[in-house]
Length: 228
Image 1: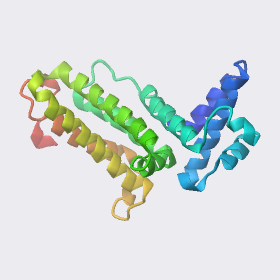
Image 2 (image 1 turned 180 degrees about the vertical axis):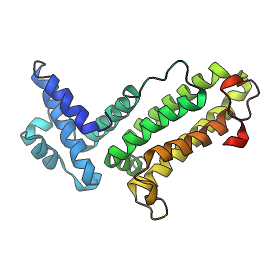
Image 3 (image 1 turned 90 degrees about the horizontal axis):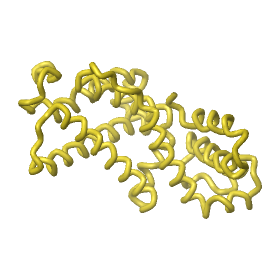
């Protein structure tokens, strides 16, 4: 599953025996994510969220201080959903295949939830709470990339700062590309919007080249740089 609203709706359906507070908070988050599918952050209001959730205006404020807080929680939970829903990597998968599995999942999620991603990128430069959500997600991704790399490649501690910077470059590259393809429908790139598998394959080869191609101890999982 890649659609976050669909995931939350299923979660709410499964929570029918949970406390009312749990179900109400889910209703508010579903309403927020649904509105952000088609509307910009500054175009929605607490009134709109409450109406979408079919709740009284005052009920909203029992759970969240305002729009900013509910959007921050929605984005935080969304990034956790992306991480937790990632398909497992088979033990026999090469490093390139593992990268592509992760990238394909992220791209499908981005494509399906582009409103949330557009909101995140729009707000991160003006709202510290939203920016922190993205920083934590990027840091977690960077650490996972480095852990995976260390299973195949001997890395000296002195090389870690440059490697960490390289991972952040890759994360930023993919996010900016996907934002142009799906979030802004950039004319030179929109033609790739309906082929997420090709996008995943392409960025994964670049990703692999940046992390593994110059690593002499990458072993049998290494792909020849000339093939990338």
